[in-house]
Image (cartoon, rainbow, N blue to C red; front, side, top):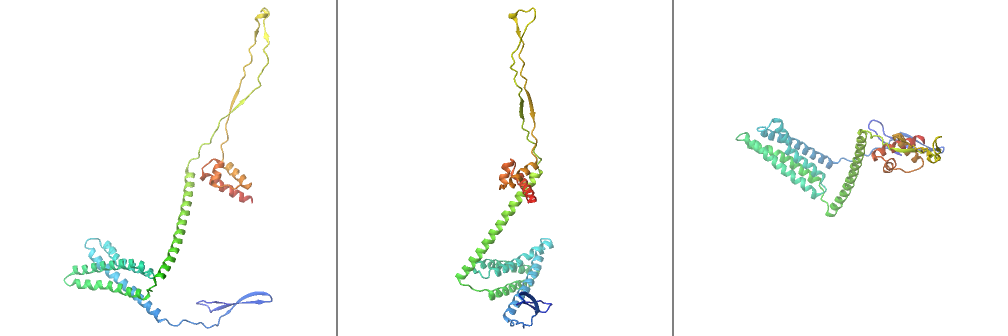
Length: 319
């Protein structure tokens, strides 16, 4: 029996029975009492702690942006000054996020923690300087404003301390190894995806360049066809005049062999003929690759690839 729950409908459960040898399924109301988890005070207090830390961080970023932006606006436009002013507080807040993600790896978590402290110190110093420039008692205001950022950072440090689990070195190494294996598999998969995408873009680029290239003129191979006529080996008959002596008989000149030379022009090879040739080979069961098609047709691989695809499409139509 599988229970089905819904927020807006009564809970139902599916019952499977065998009726006269036929299995059937139907739904009936689920009257099983729902057991709710007891109230978890620790989880509620942890949520309240981090909610307070987030609110204090937002307030520190706003105050730091106003104070530092007001000081920078003395030398820069207001929009640029206030845009840059939030870099320091936003920087150490981003380091808090990185520290959260690396909370189970103490060695790698040290870098974002130290960078966050450095950015916090720079932000507090800038706020104090802004207060000192405001007047005789302005430095007190600057110190108080700087303590806002320090308080937000401190609350975050306490919250991280409550959730951080100190693992033994061997378990840290085990967890780090699993993360590295998973990261390696992900990197290899992303690399393979990039390689295939690059290969597809290369093929598309070659096809686009091939389509833009003007068609090559047809290749005309002159073929000499000689019409050989049978040689006339008839011996010349002496011809003489009535008043000419017999010993001065002149032989008639032999006929000169005339050879007629003709020129035949081959019909240019059409794409349809190339497709038919590949279609005929595929129909006979030949396995033809792109390189093999280029060798058969005597064209580039990109042109042979298109002809081969047309032949395969034609083959599928006849099946």
